[in-house]
Image 1 (cartoon, rainbow, N blue to C red):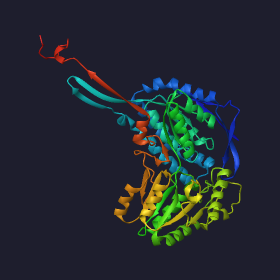
Image 2: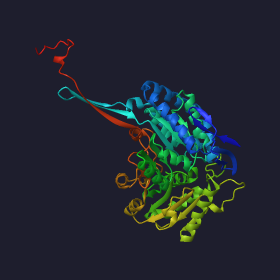
Image 3: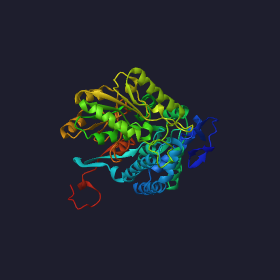
Image 4: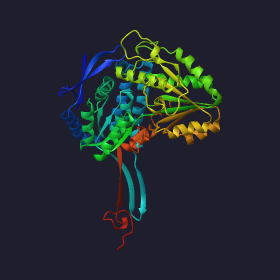
Length: 495
């Protein structure tokens, strides 16, 4: 088994805590690695490194920051296949999904490469007689990111490139379940020429998280994960005087109107529900079939599901891989049973599919005639389960989205421009798709939901990330009347 170490002050550091966590190959069920879980002292060492580097890094020119960020971007592009292989090895997602994750992460590095322009301040000359007022944005200092297992490469890239480009130093606490890809990217960051301490990586569990949330030198925390933990991270960080942005769970709805292109909607539902085994916060987990389209839509989804190839992520033929752990697989299977017990129609039962190894595989499930009081509707399952709820009208579908406590993403499939335009106003969600099932914004917009899907007043990356990782300073200056200057400026003297 390989050992996963911390990266502190530019050096690989073996954990001395005595606590470790297993790293599995989800496709075989075998433990392939072991990650050391940081103690409080080890987190403190990472913070001390970041604090030591912070003063000098915050003074580095925008030109130098940009040059280093461009070099990092080029290294990630050159090593994209290696990052993707590490994602597949420890998360289980198929290589195409892994490559897509890396590509979306690179978008965020490229946005950070342009922060020299975005960081420009504002200036008001002669706000009053002889008075100028201007605003600059300055870094916070030491900031931290706590990232999830489902996108171990992309989500860190939502955070640390922007934070560092703004002049901060960063501590990354990635998921201990699949830590190799984010650690490898941090090594590329070092190779690009960033000074030691600008980016530190500590692996850990709740001990490490709590220390980051409490440490007085950590000024801001970014988090992506489940809603209960997001709420905890946000409240704990705020109680300790920190800025916090914490993105939580989701129950994303896709409304399909009677005029929709059935083939387009069915293709979208299958890819959005079962891609990455449903382990993504922007997965479609509920299809709202409006009116007479329901039977045809359910049948079209079922036909496509039967052709879906499930297998190891390294197999080019595979379209869906395993879940992250055995416990996750069993929990999702329990929801399928709960749906059957509650009376919904099990059109396709993923538990019926048999796999020939000990990997954490589960087949895809389609549940029809789900009602809004069932656990398969109310809970975030985070697995390859799609629920179909039948509605009589567009208004009923919109009410379902509004009544759901989450508000991450929502989508509509229709040929009617008026209905689509109305939906973008009506949908109670932070990200909306029109004939697009997973409306994840590009890197120069920002990612984030509403309601119980997000805590804090800024979303991730893009312009909102810039705002989160800097604080404004407004300077008001007054200078003497130039006619009274001791330097001959060519003005007539008052005397």
